[in-house]
Amino acid sequence: MRKKIMNSLVYQIWPRSFQDSNHDGIGDINGIRSRLDYLASLGVDMIWLSPVFTSPDVDFGYDISDYRDINPVLGTMEDFDLLIQEAKDRGIGIMMDLVANHTSDQHEWFKKAMEDKKSPYRDYYLFRKGKNGKEPNNWLGLFGGSAWRKVEGDEYVLTLWAPQQIDLNWRNPKVRHEIYEIMHFWLKKGIKGFRMDVINAIGKHPDFPDKNPGKKGYQFADDLIVSRPEVDDYLKEMHEEVLSKYDGLYLGEGMLMTKEAAKRFCGETTNELDLMFQFELALIDCGPLGKFDFRKLYRWSIPEFKKIYIDWQLDAQKNHYWIANYLSNHDQQRAVSHYGDDKKYHKESAKALITSILFARGTPFLYQGEEIGMTDLAFEREEWQDFEAKNIYGQLQSMMHVPAFLAEKIVKRKTRDNARTPVQWSDNAYAGFSTVKPWIKLNPNYQKINVEAQEKDPNSILNFTRRANLLRKSKDLFTFGIFEPILQDHREILGFIRKDDNEAYLVLINLTNKPSTLELKEEWCGETILQNVYNPQPLVKKMVFMPFEARVVKLSQRI
Ligand code: NOJ
Ligand code: CA
Image (cartoon, rainbow, N blue to C red; front, top):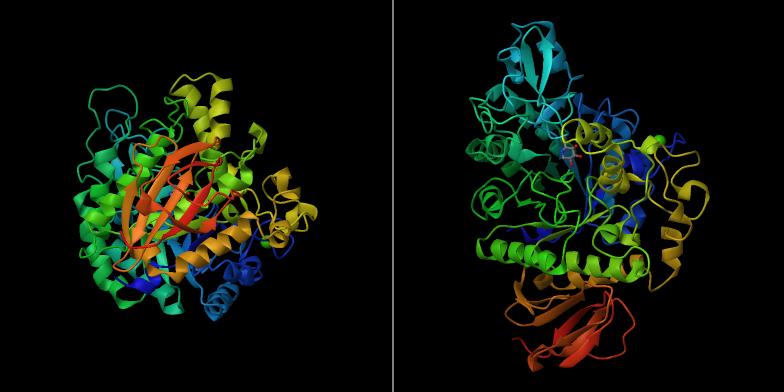
């Protein structure tokens, strides 16, 4: 295992909302350059940059129209080259977002495919004839509705996400090699890895059969589009032709990631990817169809959280694969609003959650603003920017017969806009993000929650995150050491030991907003070396943990 790179603290930047530099209200690459010292001070080793390629921005960069150029809204290639260099000068690598399952409908390949049916580009995509005056099959699109877009006559093309995001045909070796060439282009420039968008969806069932034949309505085609065996073939080829030639971090993102699939894609000896994201924690409060499946009424429990967390840790350890630990990203609610208490225990719960990310076995990821505890924002319907939110609002009503008021409530809760409000740098106008009104609503709590205020407070979430990460980085065992859960039946406290051959540490996190009683074994007591709330009580056999209290404890002997 390439220890140095796996031990990185990865910080995700969603560029439109990070920092504006040219007064148009949209974050940009030069804005990121101006904040590199801040990121270095946080201990960031790697930036995962959500897509900055040329894009009509239907899905804010996840619809690429030119993989070899920079979106003019975000800057120029010169700006990007400077970003790579200036980040490197501070010991920070840039990981780009490879969106290779689909291109924008504005991409040259798709335009050529549409202009001429005989063009070789036609086979870059998945054009199919309709059936009985309908789509070629009954697959549901991930943003709602049919997965097929009608192009002309009875001809359709597969678009699993927005209709402007056209799925590529990975069965065509030309497509695969185009993608590999694009990867070489950026890696040669000096980037340090890729996060690969919905990478487990690149291999579709070759026959495009109906899902649940005979059932009414569009069907979620899970096993026909996700983690199919072809994906391993493509990733092994990509590894051989590209990844093995550079020293980088290669991270997969995918739908419905199971432990078995994670083992396939990033097992120690499989020669595919380095690590994967899993979505079970992100979707803990949702029904099986995902974020907008409200059948669980968005309820979840701490035992459920603990189980998902611990099961992934143990499975990855036992089966020798590597995972990414995170609680927030540009597609999910803010962690402190989702799993913490963003009002009464804002500070405490934000720190507790960050502790759970930094001290787990695996590579830790923070999302912009998480280090200051940015929160969700109740957007009014007219304020939604996210394609998914707008589309799903209609689909919930038309396909699932959800009344409008309820559809609105569901979307408000889960819209990706929550994570996309501008980073709160200061209490100045527009939160120091821009000098003009930002492209998306700013969270008015920026006057209280902002980087500048937290810089001055030694006990802020920001300064806690720095200390916690320094501690993590001081011992390899926090990243790579053995993970051993304790107190598994405790209904409130997450507890585990991290150890190597010489030393052992205990991590304890009260995940509730209430005091919680702990009973510990004698050998688990030791010296507290990191703590997120004031509780003068040293760690003793029987004690009360404060709401959202988290501690890292050095055990006096290895156990
Ligand atoms: C996953 C990305 O994180 C999300 O933002 C995007 O909409 C879809 N993939 C489609 O590219
Ligand atoms: Ca700008």
